[in-house]
Image (cartoon, rainbow, N blue to C red):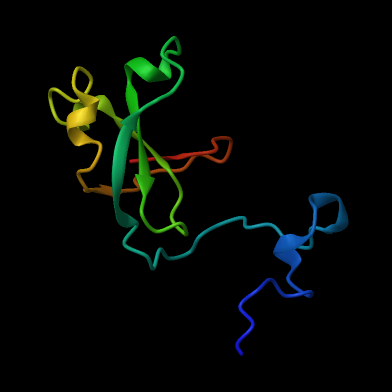
Length: 107
């Protein structure tokens, strides 16, 4: 029987207070990944935010790719008024930037 459960030595399972940072990425010399992914777009949850008026959220199918803010100008014209029409439609998104102080990339 194969055991696919969590491993005892997996540091990803430890709480942050038990981890000691030993390095920091300071520069990416060469981007190897195409930075494109397939996934779904949806409106942001906070309808009162300034970001809601400008961006949608791209959620990739591949969990290794981060979620991405996508300008509404790059979404289908009727996306804001009929987001449910696009809820099951796959889109391709490319990461164009990711600011150091932002939790999400920009696409």
